Length: 384
Ligand code: MLT
Image (cartoon, rainbow, N blue to C red; front, top):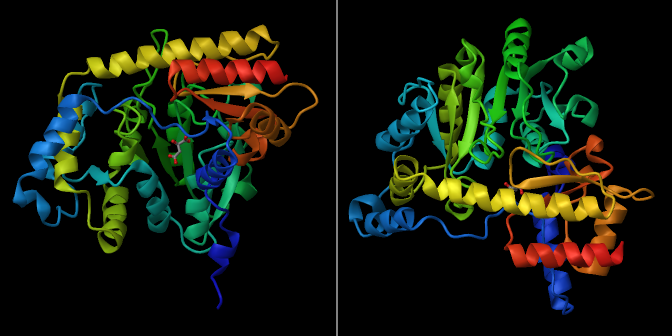
């Protein structure tokens, strides 16, 4: 049997590997606490569940969904952008996705030919690199460093890195570093894309999870951004809906059309009942979002204060469900993640799993109950 070069190059998915480690530890009788994946432990809001249950009873919804998503769902997405002052045409500028991960991976098939390149943040969400590999392309890193507040420096990108580059990815509020976009970053990105004839894709999955009065801007708040940009979002983190698999990509109509062509050939869309529940999430009361943000803010403070008290210099993030933690002196990302797992039974992803510039960090997810988070931190403290 022979496999493609793509598959040979494709690493196992980070969280699939982490799940295996958790299962092995649990089988050995360890009370594992996972601060690994960003997967909200709280339930989806009740009005969203109710809408799913009602819609699932209607046989109309049991048939194939529309390939390009239900018009009513696309309109609800357009309304959510309108509340930010951004106008999007629901027919040509919005495409529902089976979660933004799916769309991110498929985007590369629309934009890269064999040998083309994508500029991706390092560290970054693993799908950016593997999506490029699956399309037969190359991922080139844009380093995110603490010195530049984990923002890319477009002026540092070399001519060699730009050769055959078709796409640059951004993601703010950022996973895994929990950084926010500096003022002017999106303006710079749009100008860079225009000058170099590339597409900018902004992953906006943590758009609503922001703290201390900070509001995360959409890239479309930059005038003219739609000429060069697309933006991904999802209901996963905002409404505790990771398992439901529903998201979207919005923006440049030509890119949306090309992605639609890829997707209609490989999948058949999102269950209508899930899309109807998605409308209930976007159009319904938003106090559930404010409640979750307050929960994450409280947990963020517990993590930053507890680790700060034992000498780890942790930045207090303004967004996301993560804290990006520098490892203690004398450790690498891997050695510290292994120590924490072996000694404390706590799972944390090592920063280098997100790219070479993630070395020297681990990521802590805030999507566990407070008591488990506190216990995990207590165990880490004891073993340091
Ligand atoms: C994360 O924790 O980075 C994401 O939730 C993982 C994922 O989307 O697979």
